[in-house]
Length: 175
Picture 1 (tube, rainbow, N blue to C red):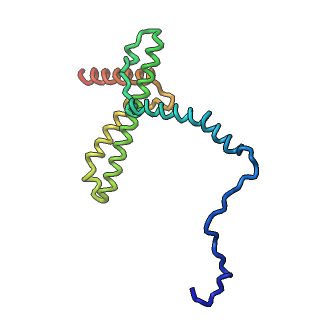
Picture 2: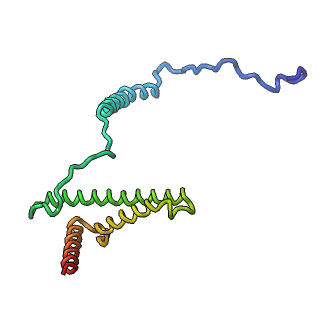
Picture 3: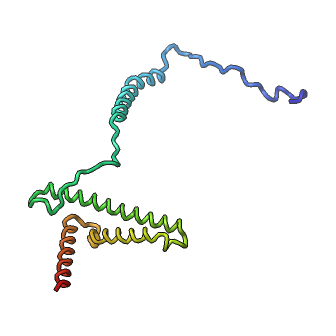
């Protein structure tokens, strides 16, 4: 700064922050409420939460690696065993979701191969295309024409009819 500048135009800030002086001898109600809240509500909740987190850290559970035991197929259930029917239906739904994901993964692999190979996709991605054709045919054979409301019983009936048609075709071909 030049020596001829006016120092009064730019006031110098105070060197120390002024201390708030209490005008009352009563305790501060805000501080009292904050302290009471901390000891009555926050401290126990924090203690319980930390204890639960320590227990969970000991027993790690990965929900996305859950393994279900295989249950009997719907054809193996006894008549009137509704619990077996329910378990077989749940197993069928899980199998259907797994098969859908398998088809989706193979489709994504084929798309990545096509994107990677560019104009050479037909010769370099033939193995992936053949795998996708096999997977989608197997999925269509098992779940095709069931619709959104398909269940294990209709899928089993479809499988039975397909097997009967194959037997008829074999019998007529052998004659």
